Image 1 (cartoon, rainbow, N blue to C red):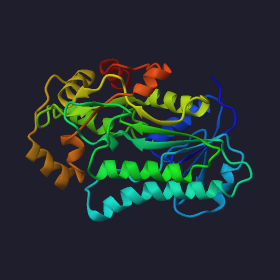
Image 2 (image 1 turned 90 degrees about the vertical axis):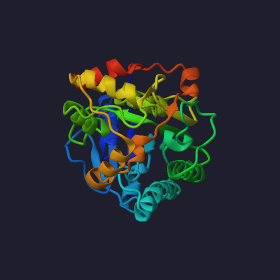
Image 3 (image 1 turned 60 degrees about the horizontal axis):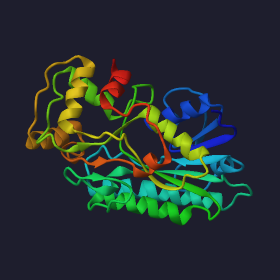
Image 4 (image 1 turned 180 degrees about the vertical axis):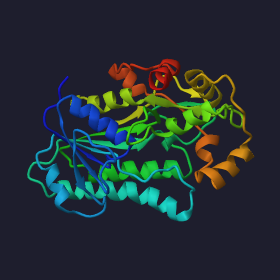
Length: 310
């Protein structure tokens, strides 16, 4: 498959953005990354400064582009202080709003807009498998997810084909832009620290970065795709099983377990992160991708981790 034309990736300087940018460039696309700071590594893309809040010269890159992909949003890997919660919400809605404003100034706006969202929109239901028709959850993440998607629906042009990708836990290779949370987890596993956390029953819905990139390409090129799709392997696992497979992938037979109170202390005082990212989880699968005939190259966790970590 080849992808002719220009693809603009807003918020594309992180792990997911650089992985997608590399993949699209390999398929022949001209890739432009919009972000506050340039990527930490060089690659087959053009970078344009973008504050994700105000109009500027960056909007010229959208003129005549084949598509725009919006990945912008503050990382949720932080302590959920009131200021951080506000930044998490506003960074997503403001970036979506200004992209919509920019496209209304163009003569030839992109005909396709692919918008990132989150599978956390379903909350953290214990041992219940959710799909695109499941009810939304409660709490900060579902609230942010709904606001994010609502802003997209308001700002998308009437003539644009819009696709929402509700991402789960993306596992990928460590490269200049980072390897996502899997990089940190694999280090802990090699130290013998990747054991069962709390009950170990919390769900981990995951997707290999290669399958996520293929899903983005499908969304960009398949005229029949529109609306929300869950980006997750058809085989979610429990936290205990994920850690067990991770230890096998790095060759560490032991993994010390951790009680919930230990995670809360360590996350707050040492990792400076939100312990709920570890203590809670969800099982999600995509009914719509199955019906569309999307085939995962990595549907099972063991070969996915071996591919990334062996």
